[in-house]
Length: 87
Image (cartoon, rainbow, N blue to C red; front, side, top):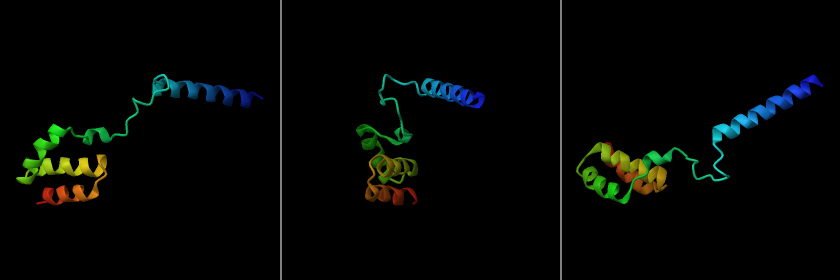
């Protein structure tokens, strides 16, 4: 019986800690992130990066490669920028 009470108390504590850590945003999941946000680009950033990448800027081409590959899931476009980045 003592074991069941201990496990129950531990479970309740862990659930409380989990709710606190998650920051339960009134049931909203808008604060949830996947980590891919760092690769997202605005239209103006894309317009700025493309000419630089086409001129041989490896960093710009790499940013575009990740944007198209991870955010847009466009593997054809991502591969295009990967080839430019490696030259």
